[in-house]
Amino acid sequence: DARVTQTPRHKVTEMGQEVTMRCQPILGHNTVFWYRQTMMQGLELLAYFRNRAPLDDSGMPKDRFSAEMPDATLATLKIQPSEPRDSAVYFCASGLVSNPLHFGNGTRLTVT
Amino acid sequence: DQQVKQNSPSLSVQEGRISILNCDYTNSMFDYFLWYKKYPAEGPTFLISISSIKDKNEDGRFTVFLNKSAKHLSLHIVPSQPGDSAVYFCAASATGANSKLTFGKGITLSVRP
Image 1: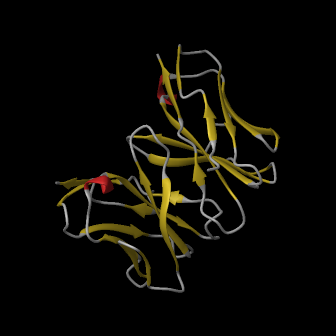
Image 2: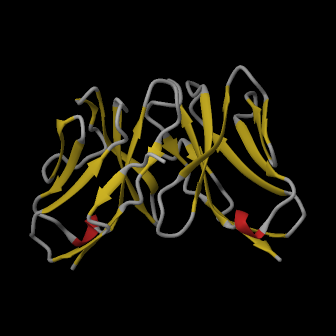
Image 3: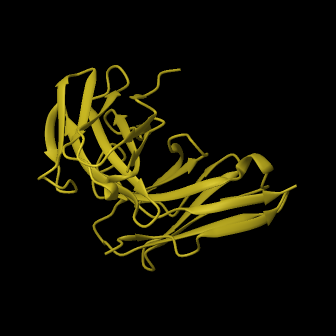
């Protein structure tokens, strides 16, 4: 059963440090999304790609967040420098054509 | 500004009875709606969807109803089972299932044995 793989599952870091989260989309999927889940905001879209090209990153704080797809099998989300308010669960999802998105199990980030 | 609203944060139902989860939206450009289910420490998983050209879609115990004039949709689970206990997210898109989804904040469903 194909699935989206996210690493690491948990990350605890100190304020000011760089954080990199990785996502391996399902093979053959051409869209990749990054969502963030917090208690206050629910699931918020940060960025998404189609055929590796960024389509929308309006949900990301541009000064500290960056999202890339170096190749079709890897998507990354970086935070530099990290802040306590970035503490959340970050989900990656991938999809194909008209099919619903498949989500990974998330990276739980804690910034102290 | 929440474009997709799930106003009830939680719902508790007896096993075997019907669960009704509600969702409202404000953006009239939305034309595709989905429900995702999420267990703790896992990602959301797709449950059922409906296009704006329909008013009902059924899949086993799960039925989604869409009322476009009221900008309201609901998920019915009949009969409810303890394994249905999870967080349910309503999501909407203006361009289909494989596009930018706007999510509600979720409803925690508890099914009592």
